[in-house]
Image 1 (cartoon, one colour):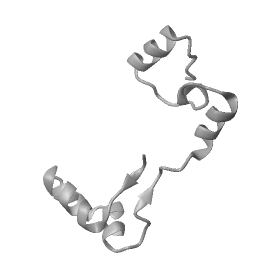
Image 2 (tube, rainbow, N blue to C red; image 1 turned 45 degrees about the vertical axis):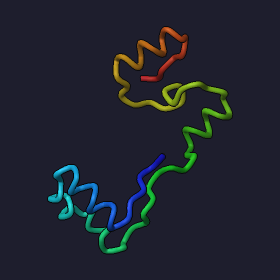
Image 3 (cartoon, one colour; image 1 turned 120 degrees about the vertical axis):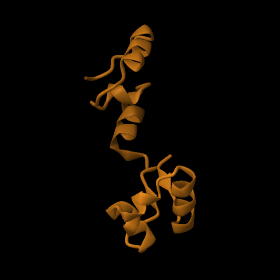
Length: 84
C-alpha cells in the first residue's frame, strides 16, 4: 500500500530497472535531498472511508476514474456498479 522507498532503495530499484535517468526528475531528486516524506499514499483516504460507510465492495462504486474494460466486465458479472 502506497510507495515507500529510502534514498538507498530508490537507487537500487532504479538501477535494477535500468531507469537511473529518473534520478534527474524532481520527485526523485526530492527524495535524494530529503525534501519530501519517504511515504506517499497508504492512508485510508476518503474513497476507502466511503466504501466502508456505504458498505461497497469496490473502489469504483464510490470513485470515478478510467477503469479497464475487463474490470468493468468482472464487476458487472458480480452486480457491482462501477461509476464512469
